[in-house]
Length: 237
Length: 314
Image (spheres, rainbow over the protein chains, first blue to last red):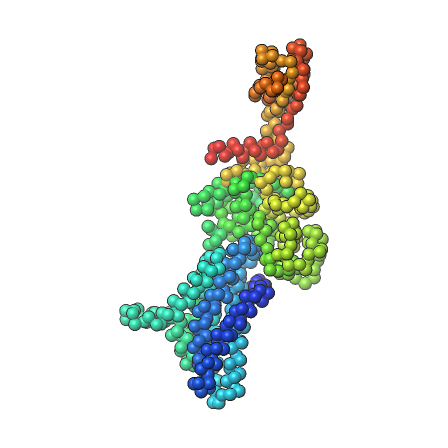
């Protein structure tokens, strides 16, 4: 497990030594801030619902962008040969990378707490439970999308391709809920369970069901396992 | 000891390695030679667990690469051909990163760091970013990352290619020094680069092994023929033919007139030195011998013959 930490810290340093992390943080905060404050004073309600509405949409583009380079860049620059001939398990390599990407997104999310502070200062009758549940759902969502992004990054050595594959995957999971009316009745249950929105909206309402947790947990596990397999397969080609 | 058994590697349709066997003994510096695309790098990549063989296996101290990859990677230091380094890091951070992954921390890290900085001559560049270094220094940093854990086995894929002559000499000295206590496998497509450094030579061509032995063994196996070039003045076309008929066990390769003289090239076994007979013949025929120069087989010739002959078969 120490190797996970070593790889994780290296990757974080890489993020924060390049303009990448700062560009991401600024863009993420700007979009959130604009859409949140734009309506905050008009609606005149003491909640963060509009923030929790916009963040999942922003994630669709931002997370694949953050994660696209995690493994693709190692392949492209050849450093994958350095790291994979060191005594590191593929699982640890993938986990370290994934957690680094997720951390950067968490930092971005932490900046949005400023809206929460605004809420505390100007708002009344704040439903703290709703805010905490909202954040909890968003964190799970980020963890899920990051796993998808890491997987996309392992499929290619081209970051742009990884970005597009990542977006295609997350949008699919995001939209599944919206196309239910076109799906035969027998299938709609399955589609609904797979879709992100279904679980997210449950949590956002304050209902933290074990089903939702299991959904996110197993999806993250699935995509990280797939990533590890893809990294292993490279050796057999 | 490393034992390579029936190693095969296919990339789709391309058969990069076609069943090679050889051993590397402890404390030996092995030169792994072959033309570009012969399968050298592929073999080394399999030995270091970067690739998995299509068939066959590699044993490192009786552990096989398929089941004990992690354990073997702990024992090996590897410098890949393209020397990929995290160029965004400073040299110190990069070495610390590799050391941490190899479980070298605290005091033993400081000692290892001091050792590799001295061995690889990194004094002035420890705090520079890797991307700012020259190719020669990058190569040293790559070597430093490969030996930070003081491995018993060192695998270097074309370590001197692309360096200038001074750097080549430096790296060669360093490898020789490291080879005193380690097993070193060093690949190259240029024989002279490693000829003086290595104890034993393995040559592969088109994915197959074509030679395996010490420098002297390879030479002895090939020392069939010595080539002799003569330049003779005052000879007629008739008399020059006597060279072929009078000399036994000597094959005249070609005879050609050059500026009124004759240039004759012949080949003989090393036990049938014809030079005395030639001198006597020249005396009786009133020839003037302008040149008489034997050319011994060089290791380079062996390498070229082997890799060309096989090419014709393929």
